[in-house]
Amino acid sequence: MSTRPRSLGGTRPLPTTVLVARREVRMRLRSRVFVGGTIVMTVLVVVGIAAASLLGGKTNLARVGFSGESQALEPTFSASATALGASIVVSDIADVAAGQAQVTAGTLDVLVTGSATAPTAVAKTAVASNIESALSLAAEAARLSDAGLSPEAIASAMALVPVHLLQPPSPRDNENVFASMGLGILLWIALGIYGSQVAQGVVEEKATRIMEILLATIQPSRLLAGKVIGIGLVGLLQLTIVGAAALIAVHVTNVASIPALAVSSILGDIFWFLLGFLLYATAYSAVASLVSRQEEVQGAIAPIAIFQIVGYLLMYATLANPTSPLVIVCSLLPPFAPIVMAVRMASSDVPSWQVGLAVALTTASIVGLTWMAGRVYANAAPRIGTRVRFMDAFRGPRP
Image 1 (cartoon, rainbow, N blue to C red):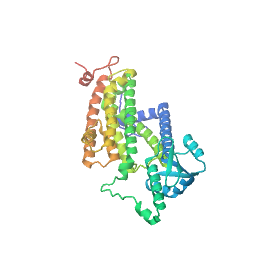
Image 2 (image 1 turned 90 degrees about the vertical axis):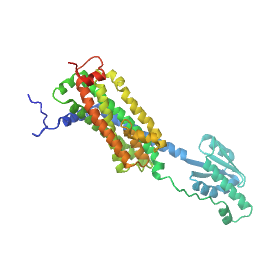
Image 3 (image 1 turned 135 degrees about the vertical axis):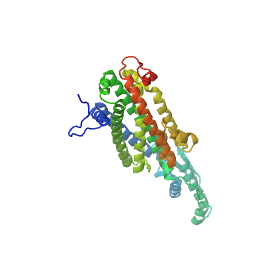
Image 4 (image 1 turned 180 degrees about the vertical axis):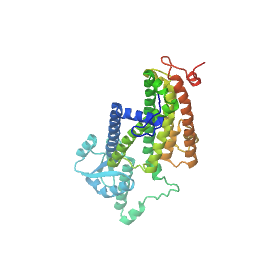
């Protein structure tokens, strides 16, 4: 009986790997786990961005009220606060007691009382440094005016010292920290989730002996590659849906300006996700084939998960100093490159040769892991029950 794979409608056979990948995609897209997980992740991301927008709006805006003679400071204070980068709302307070009640209730951040030359600021806990500086400048201008100086002389005397930076920080350095951190966390979560799905799928097929039937007609490496590719495509689709929802939410709420989200950068992030998934999913599938029960999966993949945790921790070192020797070396090593190199590329300019070397090393590791995992996969599949030692599965059955 022929076991040659065939296409659905034509006479030309499809590659075995494509058939296995298509089977995985169809099964997982129809599952409630995929639909429910996608909805939950999308809702959480959108709600988180909306909450960040609301909280950010509340904390960035300072409400300052002026009472009595201090109201003469309002024009100078507003100009100075704007120059110092403060976002303010100024209002007149008729009664000092009412103003203090507003400060206590939290509807007013700062209440200014007293005269224009000797004002007093009242706050609930503390006064922001830029608000305090703007108030001091306004009071100083009032004192100079009271001393008889002309407005031109006051403006000249209180002119801020210009600062020229030889190496000014670029918008990419200042604004991409949020994008880089979000990218690193997303990659870490995605690699863990979809890698675990590969491991659980392997154990499920082994426990039900479906794996033995498949291996009788399909080469182990092709079966493994098809499973990894299929689950990877499903994961990529889920991430695309969640990422699109996040971009829309960011655009609507204006919670952040992220220049890293250019087309080339997004394609680079997808590329590193695919490389990282192929690397970890292949390793997960190899160690998962050593066990026969679902409750043993987490213990089997724990040694590999440690590398992902280390990569996650290195992300923060990368954000702090993307050019440190430790970060550069770790971004080239295959276990950490999918996260560390992706974060480096999003937060700073990385030399092309370092990116190329990291890609080459990771790709070579994927090829080697695929061969090794296929061997372990085939030798460990028929052994049901007790856990198989890795070296026994790698060597194969003894004669």
